[in-house]
Amino acid sequence: MFNKNPSVIIASIFFTLALVVGTNSASAFEVTVTYSNLTVDGPISLGILPEDFPEEVDVVFEVAGVGTSPSLCGIGTSPGIVVCEEKDIQSALVALGNLSLNVNQLEDMEMEFTQVTRIGDFEVTGLNYNFFAVDTATATNVYVSNSSFQLSITGHDEGSGMDFTYTWADSEQVITGSSGAAINIKPGSDPNSINTCSGGTTTVAIFGSGSFDVEAIDQDQLVLASALVRTVGKSDRSLCSIEDVGVPASSEVFFDGYDPNPDGHADLVCHFMTQNLVEDASSEAELQIVGCEDPNDVDGCQAGDTGYSITSGKDKVNIVNDCN
Image (cartoon, rainbow, N blue to C red; front, top):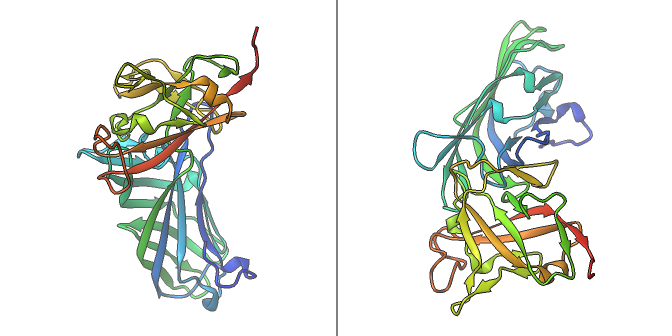
């Protein structure tokens, strides 16, 4: 949010679209679009003084998806393209002076992403949205729209009888994740109880999707809390397998369960050394994930490799101490 004078609240312009996560919804990722290069045609309306009209605008979207990946939005017609629509926005609030809009007034939305790495790194390549016209105290037929990253607010000023258009011509897009990868510790178990006296392994599923390729993950660099993947055989092969274990399900923050029906996407199931895990875990455990274009290279994935990416996922754990 940009505000040249923080004490003048009415002069602030902000757009906030917040995700309300329910038991059957996915986690969210955030897209912040900063608009600049303002031109004004017509009277300044909506209760904002001309000297307080912002030169820069931040628009923040929280969209259904996983981490930095819009994997739960629709897959586009071209390979590597994902398209998020109005249905993927869970709630919305737009405020500009006396103007206030919410998700019920969002007329349409199309946000296009292009995949730039196999592990699920994306950039925004298209953004279009419109909000229904609404009446305010000083203007009528106010319409907020974006086309090709150009923001426009149009309306009719009641005081002067003139139309107005505010346009921010340039923009920059930044994607940030809120939860990282979708994982499930001990699939099918609730709660995810881990016995500190166990000498066995703890199973973790990493969910793949049309935009998250689990085969790009470097299995040797997976770390759950402080635990590494168990290795087997003379070659110390990581005890992991590619399976289709189902679809992740989420609670408010953590992935606690899953729909066991296959979704057609490859998932990665790995087994971690339990004794090492419990030394570092409390009520949750975080899985560090490293990936690249060729994770099977002799050196694994290293910074500077093509498609090199780091992400993480979290799930609840219930630590118990039963040595009997």
